[in-house]
Amino acid sequence: MGTCDPAAVAPAPEEAELPAAAGGRSTRDGAPALQGDFFLSHQPCTPSQLLCMKERARLKEEEVRQIVRDTFASSSDMDLKLELVDTLQRIGVAYRYGEEIDELLRAVHRDAQHQEGGRDDELYVTSLRFYLLREHGYSVSSDVFIKFRDDQGNFASAGVNGLLMLYDAAHLRTRGEEVLDSAVIFTKIRLQSVMDSLEPELAKEVRCTLDTPRCRRVQRVEARRYISMYEQKAAARSDAILELAKLDYNILQALYCEELRSLTIWWKDLRSRADLRFALERVVEMYFWMPGVVYEPPYSYSRILLTKFFKLVSLIDDFCDSYSTTEESEKFTMAIERRDEEDAELFPAYMKALYINVLHDINDIIQELKLQKNSHAELVKELFIDITQCYHAEVKWRDEGYIPAKVEEHLQLSAPSSACMHITNLAFISLGDVATREGIDWREPASEHVVSTVQTCMKEYGFTVEQAKGKLGALIDEAWMDIVEGCLDGGHPMALLEKVVNLARGMDHMYKRDDAYTFPLGLKDAIASAFVDSL
Image 1: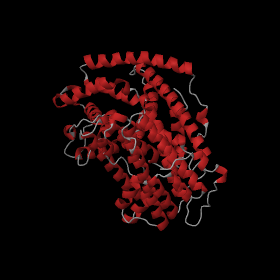
Image 2: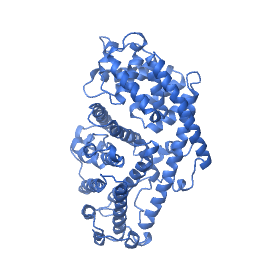
Image 3: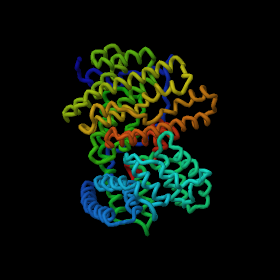
Image 4: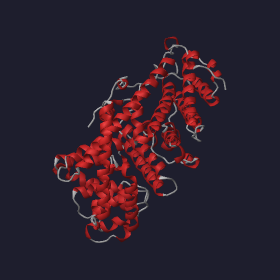
């Protein structure tokens, strides 16, 4: 393969003129970026403040650890143990107590079939136990809910908290679990019917749950929301847990901001080497996705790697959407497959700059992984070639004016080109020895790229837009069932499986109502909460 300096080969941005978007070219609309270069200078705290927070968090972590151990060891009340686990998870600090939580849930799973009588027979506790066990990959039978249902299919009367917990638990269903299917319908109707009579805060929680079940929420977004909720529970909260959660959130926020600073510098350097006026300015929005996949402190490199790779991928997507004809896309894809920098001479100036610099930065990622002794480094180029081929196929569809006759056909292309499996595989690769080649090759349908599929659904079924969205919503529910089933089969480490779940959560958050990457105004508050506004 030929080698060269991308800065020397690529013309300066002002010299590489972009073609007009006409004659077989399309333009991609998109709102301006939210943050620009904000994170080059933004610091949520000073270095000395960060040191103080880390020391305070270390002390609070041990204080909470003692609370965890005392509760798990001495309490005979199972709901107190389960509620503590649930609180630690929702408030965002459970990763600090992984061993203790795993040990408790193993014991709960062993004893699940033998716990009868007392409060443990209540719908709320049964639902909470089922939810936590399934969320952690334990295979537990949904038959535990049969005793709560009468001959008409109605579930035993329960308070709002019990209904909320059942609704959340029932969404950890797999295909064919009729009792959970009926639980979703029953609880949704019941919660909707009582919402207007509830206190404002509880009504707000019901609306949030009906909008997005807990198992589908992005963990850091949920942590920020739940910290505020937990703070209002003056009589029932632990001040030590609350303080630790706030410290943890602020410490991670400072780390994320440092990562964003590094990524902003990288992006500005890339823009200085190539004319990227056609590309959406979305470094912060792209990064926002990545703590949703791997949020814990040790995975800083993974978040940076994922953001760089998929920002480069998005350049190819933007190029194909905005300025590439079918012929240009085919030439570009073939060059990416060969990965020979000498192929740059085949392209006009603006394409030459894009090709050389994308290839250079992908090679940098591969070399970084090799320096870390990562045995999967070469798979990065396979992922990049694959997603480029997917985008080329979409260009052909676009220029032919082709609309697939069936949703299934559309998903065969649109699901791969959504890049969700590429994100999953690269996340696996970035974890190093945690992932085997078998684990990386394993795939589950983490999401469906439904926005561009609406038109096909309308064509196939003769639906209106709203009917098509309803049909696709049902397909998404089925995809979530497949994800749950994949997490329960015991064939793969939960350290990998949880990344698939986290990706699906991120996809749901980004695309549930609109394409929040292209039109990011809906992310403005979430980005501010995650990276700007400290607790």
